[in-house]
Image (cartoon, rainbow, N blue to C red):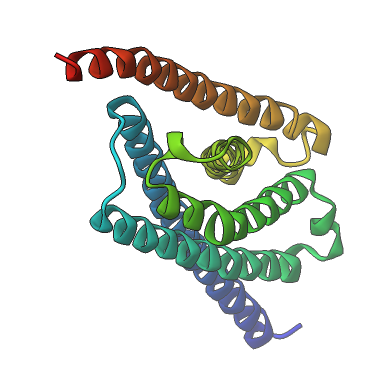
Length: 215
């Protein structure tokens, strides 16, 4: 092997390292933006539940804009994630695809994608029509709460797996995803408890307003 060949290989490796660094940076930015948007949306939803606030046209426009931004971030996540997988495959070969952490991340992103479709096609139109989460029919409200919990937990869990380099090859797929469904159910039950509390509060207030209106 000549010196020129060795130098060419070194330069190629350095280029791939810098390319991977740039793609990972964009990948993390997309994830951070999506997490910020989702958490902001969830906090606003909890606030509206507690205050019993009805949706306005401005709120509907904001939700649509928020949903579009999350979709863009999700697409960016898919594109950059696929690029990272391709770069790592060129460096490590087929063995790279046996990494359980990679499988866990792909599963979560697939669930996020399907959940985003449900939010866009079913949950958001139902919320706009009802005007409030509490005014949704029972099945639609349960779907909205579950989708919201799955979205928040999945983005945070995916970010944890993304930065958790020591987790690679050390744990099995079942170990890596053990806490995932538990956190989703905890998030769902927390939102369910908040909505039930808000509905009971509104039910107890309604007779008082009705009595006051007769005087």
